[in-house]
Length: 159
Image (cartoon, rainbow, N blue to C red; front, side, top):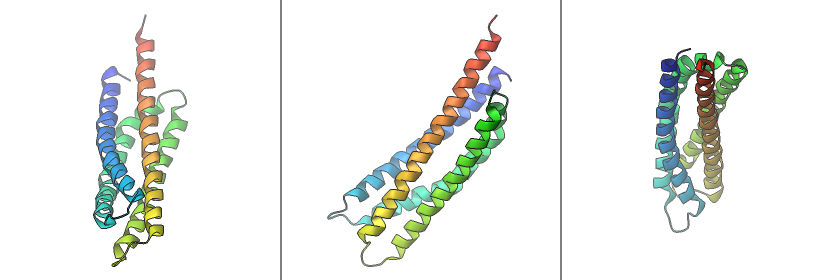
């Protein structure tokens, strides 16, 4: 594996993770608003969350595909890479499932016309934080793996 391949993988991961991080921050801000809804109409917040979920159900799938096509083959070449890639693939499945859970919860909240009960808001917050934490852990794992590839490549190229 060449340094150019590793740098391309790093750029792909970092670019995608910056975009995801921005969406996560927006999502985190919306979830935080739901923690103290007194005097606040939660519907605009729920709409922002819906937009975030829509991002993850469309563009995040593209992100996963790009990682699996470009990053995972490089990671598989590393010691323990097969195990790591299997774990990352499973995380992609879990992330998609968590996103669907949140989407379903937001659908329920959107169908309520008069008042969104506190229990529904609590579920939105719970699913939202779970998704945020999983995305954060996943991004950290991938970035750390690419950094290890770079370190290994540099160590192998030293005389």
